Image (cartoon, rainbow, N blue to C red; front, side, top):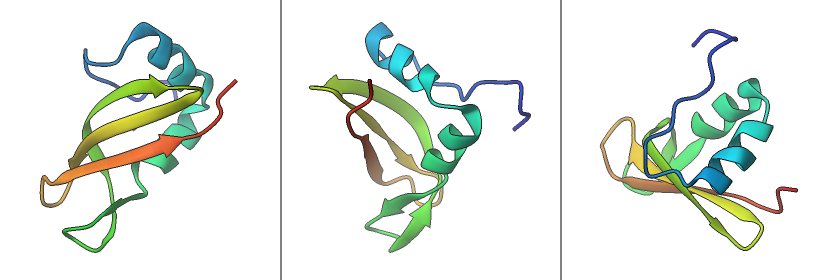
Length: 80
């Protein structure tokens, strides 16, 4: 992915969650999405088909494993 393009998210990303996600530098976004643990593969994988929501002050990313297609999630705590 090129440095000047943001990580794409799907339409299930509420505007408030998108604002928090966009505060994260793009290189850090890629690190987050490329290091998600999949319980079916038992390794860190890339998350695809990303959606997100806010739970309190945390951003919760949900998606699919880029290898097996299983459900994966990542919590990013206390974004201000």
